[in-house]
Length: 127
Image 1 (cartoon, rainbow, N blue to C red):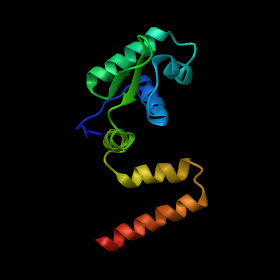
Image 2: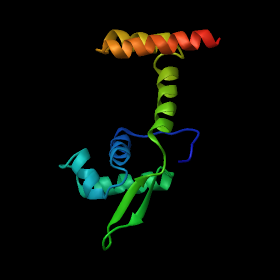
Image 3: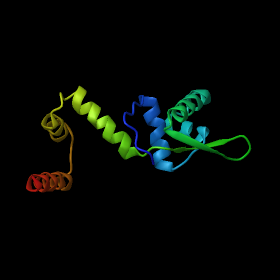
Image 4: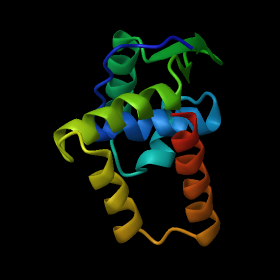
């Protein structure tokens, strides 16, 4: 999947992309059922078309007139860009503030904390 320089996804676009990443592909109806069954079909359809225009989603012909949508970008690419924006805009570019927030405000299982320590130690040794 192609890497894009700056990805700006709205909350709704991210909700839709999450369904596509999880399922691999889905129709607008299937996306709507997972995102919010009370949402108008046209709302989801519009989001999918916008995502396609941005190059984040593609589609193939399904049964009849139905389009089956699939992600054209991977979640890691979006995650990297989003995390960079959060780090810069919310934590003033300070990784320690971001890490402190994660450790202090989230219930992180001990095995995950141990893995974080391993990653930090490994990174420290490489320098």
